[in-house]
Amino acid sequence: MSQTPTTMEEALAENARLRSQVQRLEEMVARLEARLNQDSQEFLEAAVDRSSGGEAAAEEDAERPEARRSARTHGEPPGAAATEKVDEVEHHWPTACEKCGSKLPARTRTEVGEPQRHQVVEIPAVQAHVTEHQMHTQCCDACGHATQADLPEGVPPGAFGPRLQAVIALFTGAYRVSKRVAESALSDLFGVKLSLGSVSASEQTMSAALATPVAERARTSSSKPWSMRTRRGGGKIGNAHGSGLPGRPWSLSSWSTPSAVPRPPARCWGHLPASW
Image (cartoon, rainbow, N blue to C red; front, side, top):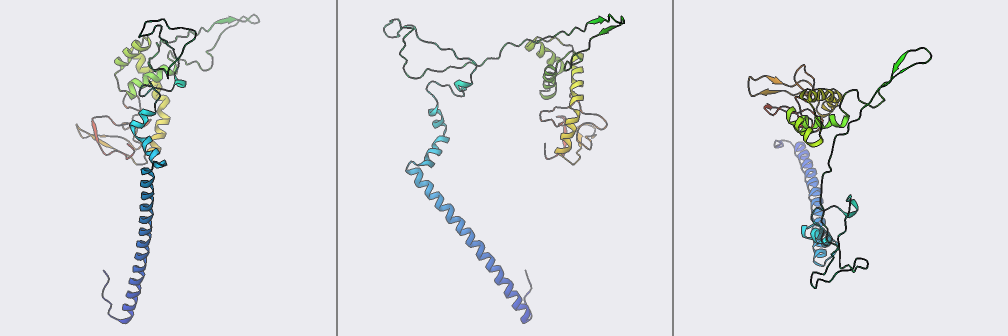
């Protein structure tokens, strides 16, 4: 609050300041009244349009669940895919009249209405595909040297292809299942026989491949370092990049990466970056 003017000059200056403030407030009130009148007019027009069955009513009705249900084709189950997006369509026709038992013709049919649709979603049987690469050795007729063929470009040097390694990383990294459960799941789902050591080796390969993009994502997602204290012992976890234990690189065996950013263990608590 300003002090009371003690001279004529101060009183005139205070009067001018108050007049300017009142003028700004009057302009603000005028803008708010115009905005309120505009919104009220639009609301009234929409109400009249709805009562008369205009476009607003049609748009509002289209958003209602019962309208969406009634808009579906007759016989279409809820959540069904469009016919042009299904993989296979099988047509079934009745063979006899359910009322009199007469045999229905198969060549000249008289269809009534739309067919009732029934969709069945099934996962195809998946069996792991094994490719054996045989590198033959051939003797040179000119000098007698034996030369062995190399693996073609794109063939991984290990025993697992990129999709299989990705599935292993999905199980042990994102889904957080144990190596033994991942081993059993791969055997049950795909017929792939692995050892626990093979699962660990695949984790290390995938961790090395993802180390660079994970570090880059961690740098871009949060510029502030973070640290946490465990429930036991009060030791801190975290480093300047928020990407693992101090002095230890990120790996699938210790972190989950559903969004390509390492997350802290579930037993830790503390201050986390705002992006988590």
